[in-house]
Image (cartoon, rainbow, N blue to C red; front, side):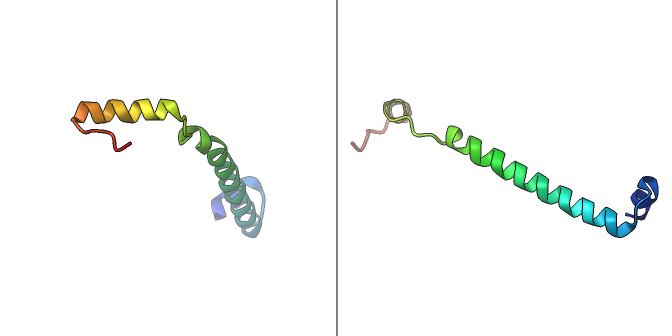
Length: 66
């Protein structure tokens, strides 16, 4: 932190504070991004999901439980 503070002309306390704030902002932004896309990744598509499950079960030689 000392080298960064010297390069930026700031105190070490200011560098630590800005570093902490930047990490917090990045964490929040990533959490929002993950929350926004999570629904797309794990979306239930009804009939399409049923077809996929039926296809997998057919390939492994199992029968659907429905």
